[in-house]
Length: 437
Image (cartoon, rainbow, N blue to C red):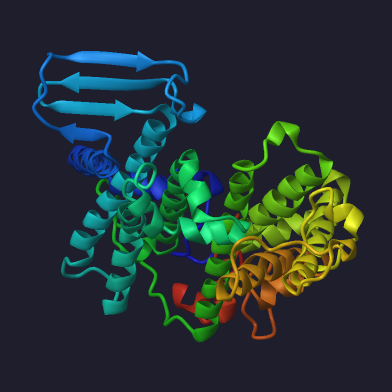
C-alpha cells in the first residue's frame, strides 16, 4: 500500500477509534461531559420533563412500575422526583434514548471544537477547503443532535427533526408517530449515531489533513489532490443510499405502531425482514463500505452466501414489479401496485393505497425508497462489479485499470476506488503507487 494512504479498519470504525483519539486528553473528556450535560439539560427543559418552580413538601421520589395512568408501555418503569426547586420526570425509554443521544452529541461536539483549534493552527497541512471540510466533519453529529433536541417528548422539536420524512417513507402520518413517542427516541438514536459514524469515517480517511492526535507522534501527511467531479458524484450517491436505507429501515418500526409484530403473518414478516431490513442494510452498507460490500457479493458465489444475491434480487423485484392480489393481501408491498392504487384501480388488480401522503412527497418516497433501494438490490445482485465501479466508484479488482492506476485495498474502505478518480497518485511521490509486498 502506498505510504500515507489510510487503511480502513471496520472494527476501528465501529468503536469510533479516531473520535476517541481526538479526545484522549483528560480535559477533552471533561469538555465532552460538559457538552453532554448541557444537551441533557436542554432536552429535559424543552421536553417538559424538568420544571423549575417553588414546591412545598420537601424531597420525594416516586417509582411507577405499572401503566396506571394509561400512558404507553414504553414509559415504565418511570421515576418522578419532586423537590423544593421543582420536579423531574424520567419515563424509561425516553430517558434512556435521551442519554444515548447526549453521549453521541457530546462526542461530536468535542471533536468539532478540537478540530477547529487544530485546523486554525499555523502550519497545518491543507488549504481553506480542508478547513471547511474538517469543521463540517466535526459539527455534523452535533448539529443533528441540536436539531433533534428534545424530540422524544416535544412535538415542536419532532416536527423540525425530520420525523415527517420517515412518516412519508412509511406512508403514515406524523400524528401517529407523535402518539407513539417511543419511536421519536429511536429516531434520535439512529440519526445522531449514524452521523457520528460518518464523522468517524471522514476522520479516518482525512486523518493526515488534521495533524497528529493529542498523544500521537507526527506522521507523514498525504498531499491530497483536488477532488474531481466524479469523486463528488460518487460521494453524493453514497450519501443518498445511506439516507434512503436509514429511512427505509426506520419505516418498519413505524409500521409496528399500527400492527402488532407478534400477530403479523408471514407476508408482513417477509416485507419487514426482506423488503425493509435486508435491502435497507444493503443500501447503507453500500454507502458506507462500497468496496467491502462488492467483495462480499463476489464471495457469495459459493457456500451459504449464495442465498444473499437471491434474496436481494427477490426483495428488489418485489418492491418494483407488479404483485398479484394474493401477495398484496398477505402484506407485501410494491411500487407498481401503489401506482395502481393512486390511479384508483380496484383491489382485485392488486392495487395498494399509498397512505395519507400524496403529491411531491409521495413521488419522492417512490423514487428514494422503491427505485433507489430496490433498484440497487436488483442491479447489484445481477452485476455487482459494474454497478459498484460505475455508480459508487468502488472496485474489488487488484489489477490496474485502463489508466494504469491500481486501486488500493482497504477492508471496508469507503474510498477504495479513490485512485481511479484522480486522488490516489497524490499519496506517493512516484507517478504510480509501489506494489504491495
